[in-house]
Each structure stands twice: as structure tokens, then as C-alpha cells.
Length: 347
Image (cartoon, helix red, strand yellow):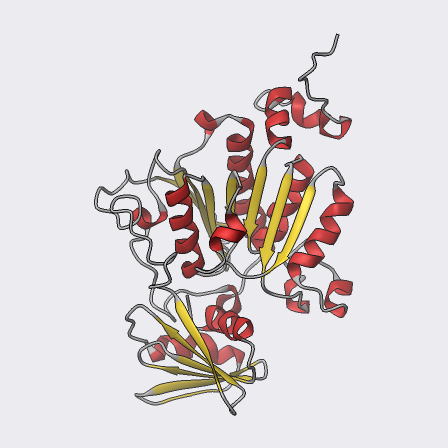
């Protein structure tokens, strides 16, 4: 006879509960869980598909961008009609995933995670999945997670290379223990400057979601507390032990939250009468114009002197100064300008 508090598992999850690591109890926990995915580009599009099919109770998807044709090579949740309809990625994802699994409460939110929105957008969730595209957002997620004791799964890909690792506050290193500070703008390659191939996305997301299912189903002891790195073109697969928590870590050690209080991260302001937005990083940087020029040259016309670098890309003119400040000409939209800055200059 069925117990009063017993949860009925829908037949659609029959193969998942047959797996001994999850079973009926684990599936019931997954169905009661709340997961938020930050970003719905290549990583997020696949993460959300896996998580919706696995049956998470509530799945929130946050993204500020819209679907473009160049996304379709790797962002498998989207199609040509989404491009023609100019759909925001979060809205397109919600529409698709509600059809995939009507039992999941899917929330697509067209917004960006920043110091003023982080509590509102991430509050009340059991797990945060990283599918963002810059270190400002990742350090902000890390501070929120550490402050509120919420586990999250880091992930990044570029070219044929990717890495991922879980972060469980109070049980191991946080992001600032692994990366003390964000790399200066223009140093790290991005998908828009170095490209990316689809298979590396599938590999990294598979590991991210596997760790998520372990956490959500109650198999915390099975979480792989290592940094997994993969280069699919060079056939390199490595697992590096996560460092122990750094006692003097600014975030999990000293409990300082500069990204949450807005004292770190990029600032933006519109320049009246110029159809431009200025982006100013709050941390001190020194631009390497030669390196930046080499990365941007395949994308458009680039000129430079010892004071600045100017590039014409996708109908926008980007002027970068030696201190990391940039003027994005061709828009008054701060979200668009921030996206251009993150794509082509850095965090």
C-alpha cells in the first residue's frame, strides 16, 4: 500500500532510477530541487537540456543575449527560426524546454547577473550552474555562493580546450582559492577570438551535469573534487587535485565580497551624442596592445599606437586604452556594450 508521503516517479524517468547511483530516492530529490543556470550560450544550452530531461523541479535560466546565426554551430538548443524571430536566448530556451519536459518549472529570465541583481536572481536555489562568459560574473557567483553556502559548478571552454570543477562552500576551495584574481582584459582568449568546436562543449557539460546530479540526488560523497581539463584536439585529459582552501583567501577566508558590493567589476556609461558606451574596469590593468591586435585582426580592421587600439568589428568601432578602458561606438545599449567588451577585450 502506498505511503501518504511517498512520491510518485513518472515513467519518463524509469531508466534514470534504474541507475543504482540515483534510484527512486535520488530521483525524488532531483524532482524537488531548484537549479539556476547563469548564461545560456554553448554551455548553458546543453546544461539546461540535460537538467530538464533529468527532471529538476525548477530550472531558472538567466541570459542577457539574443540568438544569432553564429550561435547555431554549438548552442544546440536553438535553431534558425529563433534567429529569424530575434529571440532572447533565455526566452527561446524556456519555450523549447517546456515542450521537452512539461513537468519541470522552467523560468527564462532575460537579464544579467550583476551586483544589483545577484540576490534577486540567484536567491532560493539549491545549485548554481556556471555557463557564463567572463570572470566578473564568475567571481560574483563565487561570492554569492560562499556567502550563502550554495554549491556551484564552474565550467569554461575555448577552442578545443575546457575545464570544470565543483565548488562546495565550507567543504573545499572556492574560485578565489584557485584563481586569486581575474586575468587582465585582452589576455584570455574567447570563443569570439579563438573559436570553439562543439565536442568540447559536450564533454565539459557532461561532467558539469554529472556533478550536479550527484549533488542534487544526495550522492555528495561521489562528487569529484578535482579540476578536470580536456583538450579534444590534442587528446589530453587530465585531473588535477583542487587545492585546499586558502586560509587568507579574500572570499572564503576573509569573507570579503567586492564583486557583490560593486567595488569590483566593469562600469559602463553612455556617451551622450556619440552613440557610444564607455566601459571602465574597476581593477587596475595594463593592456598588451600587440597581443590584443593579433587576436582581433582576423575579425576586422585594427590600428594602434602607443596610446590606444581601435578595431572595427561587426559594425561597431571598439577603442581600447592602455588602462583597459574602452569605448564601444555604435550603440547606447549598456548590455550590448558589456557583451562586446567581454567578447573581444576580456572580463
